[in-house]
Length: 142
View 1 (cartoon, helix red, strand yellow):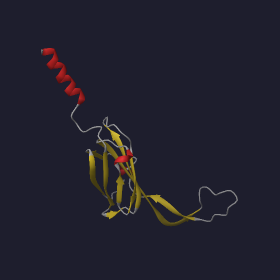
View 2 (tube, rainbow, N blue to C red):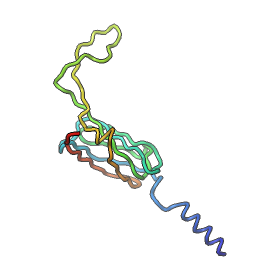
View 3 (cartoon, one colour):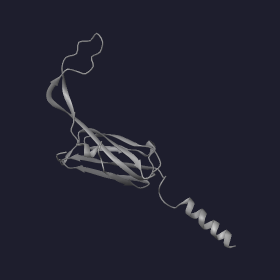
View 4 (cartoon, rainbow, N blue to C red):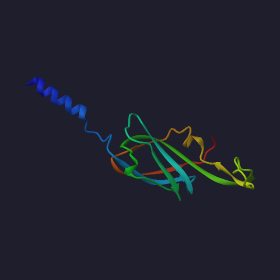
């Protein structure tokens, strides 16, 4: 009898009653210096043994959406946010199509600091089902 109770308890612990592994979705906003990011991208990488896929979304007019069908599972994620904008400078394109005349193009720069993308420490915890997360990025020198 004692063996049966111990085995039952072990099965309960191993099966877990947490939310990890359950599908999730997330929508929200991204602002930089209080202004909605006009155009960019957001990436959520699973960390701390969170199962599932990487979440990716374009940011359009400050809003993003990663549907449940993207394959993300509830858990903890590292957040990376990127956005570019044109400068006033005109530059020659890096690559020109063969046989085509291409003039100067407006220079485009990544303006979100690396602390929010390549050197990020931002994380987010997502629960099963639908989540809403807003990211208000501060303007600061790197």
